[in-house]
Length: 247
Image (cartoon, rainbow, N blue to C red; front, side, top):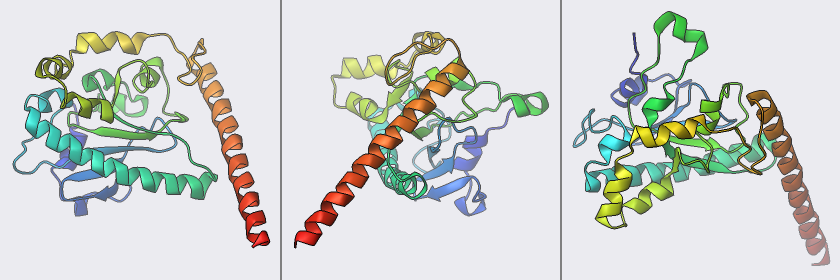
């Protein structure tokens, strides 16, 4: 049995979606909390199903890209929503952690490849069907208990190619038609090997023998970044304080 979770949300009145799921919404999109977050902050932005777009047209990125003009309109709208979300995430970063760090925004090249086992529910209901276009917006720490295997990690690694930054996708629309058509194919056979690559830190390229070692390394790097950024903030504060005293 499969649950068309994202599709259900995209066709539902936002007022009927629980606040534990829905973060915000606009006339054209929904922003929800990722049910299986792979970072401290992880959201999905979904285009709402409404005219002139159909459920099937919005099923995934490859299908949407079949109509270049309509695809550009949808993806541009998602990009604008993501920009607003970035600001809110950064505010929450400062409030909760005292510093800001990177945020990634993009699509999976072959979403069907990421229908991975969700161990605590797969026994009862099978795999979750997430067939609806969704834009990932997540912090670059990748510190989450839900990061359990190589496929999880490699699907978001920013240098492997499976995770398509939204700016890159938008650049396709301004390229030659032949290039656009080539990129829009999103052939799963091209993307599948990327999930099977060796584990390596996306920051420093250090190879890792397993997921626990990688997560420990990422946490160390994140804490080191936190210290650097907080030190910068403190130095700036002291400088501004001295400048104010001189006046």
